[in-house]
Amino acid sequence: MGVDVQTEDSAIRALVGRWVEAACAKDLDGVMACYAPEVVAFDAIAALRFEGTEAYRKHWEYCMGFAEGEMIMRIPDMDITVGGDIAFCHYLANCGCTDTAGNERTGWMRGTVCLRRIDGRWLIDHEHYSVPFDPETMKVMTELQP
Image (cartoon, rainbow, N blue to C red):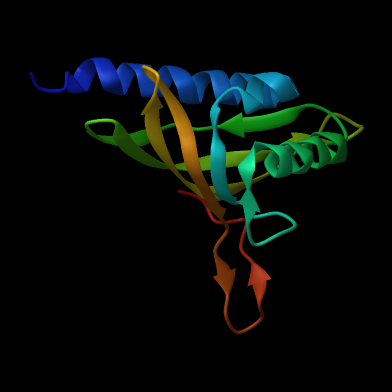
């Protein structure tokens, strides 16, 4: 019996949707519920690597505390590939927050997540965010647009 790609695609989109909603609501438990216990994350902020939900939870707590106002995460389009109990998706995400005056401070990032189906549920097993940079100045290029 083959994988129903449409059903799996919908389940993964729902998971990423819950993750986005939880991040924007600064719901730390909701964010962490989307990750596998052994998650390995290469986030664009603060460290090269995070291993396990305990380490990544502390990082998310820092990020949520850093946001002056509302957190912003928009993923307008996402490509998903499913193969059995493993899947990956990649997308461009507009991330940031509002400042104390309510102004948006966002930039575009590249995101890739690898997922595993564990006990019948899709969970994020690996996450990688990056921002392009100019090799001549070593400055990040958050002003780029898709």
